Image (tube, rainbow, N blue to C red; front, top):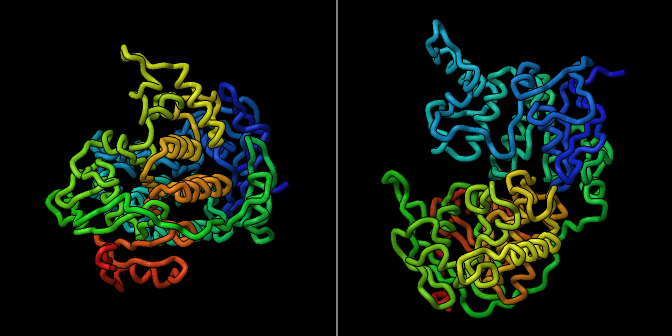
Length: 516
């Protein structure tokens, strides 16, 4: 029998109302990149949390290098050389990069903190693996890509040999994804063993040696990546054939729903404007996509449109009404739905039940509240059950499930269900397929196109070029806070878009009146 770096035998983990892992065996070879694939809620993160000591299994055993081990908590995992980068990072935002990396294993001498040696080791690791972080930068001031590099350095600083990456590319730009793929290959060549959870089949095909598929908590099979195809993997994962082609007819744009004029959003700490003099329109019956490399003002543009940020100047007209100074709720009531890029920060109240999250935008309406100000719990539950069924939101206890305990992809589906069901005039969808499986991606794309075909205006923001090219009717490219190009997805190439996204080219983006 091979001595695997890690062998998880017959692992079973139960939660109230659900068996998250049902008799699963997983074997990780030394020096390999092993992908773990499955739908949202298939049990991938739970299995890795068992390996990292966050959960204790009811049944099963774990072996490291052929020796049975007990992992009661993450400290035990670290002592065995097992490290994990979580889907939602575990960083202290007000601490520096260096302080986060050494947190829990701080070097001391005579009771005093000694950072010099730690800084030297961190910088050597940063240079060796081309991670390039600023050790003195605060976590709250750096990009998500840099935060992820910090998490990777936490593992390397602790000399971990088994590296777990849970959805590592869900929040990264295309360039950062390519860099991470290369880092993972370099780590494997150094002899590290990597477990890699992802929904993105192209990444699994590119970087992994083998792939294990889970479905609804059960083991489906393990295949050599070189011997399979994305179509075969998706069929194993979902249990049916999945279409990778977005089916949509020609758009029929109608009247202007969103009209943005000379919009500016100020930068923090007196820096230059992060959104500068932006003009565009979105009509009913079309999907307009804002494309660009992450960090070029897309987030701040959406914050301004939704009311999360105040405008420095400019106007936002929604369905003929100036909403530039309206609060968030009023913009929502007037017909705006917003699927945010950060579902934890802006999409859900994680310690609320699923049913209460489903009515966050409408709990104050007569359908859900009495004239005396009491919530109509029966109406809320009936409404939540309908959305859960229609959008296939999976959770252990249905509508009473606490949102925090759900998988990231099912949290995303819950937010999408709530926002689309509001029947908005304008649907703002920011990275709507982030962290969801191929079956859910197919479903979400169909929902966006159905909204368009129903005469709604859809503003999509995406870092996924396949999504940009296949779902949108018009593409606006954003670079350093400005719109630098407008394109028809049927007439532009990915390479040409890339030139505009990197600032190598630009053109004047005209309003509809200027085009006429």
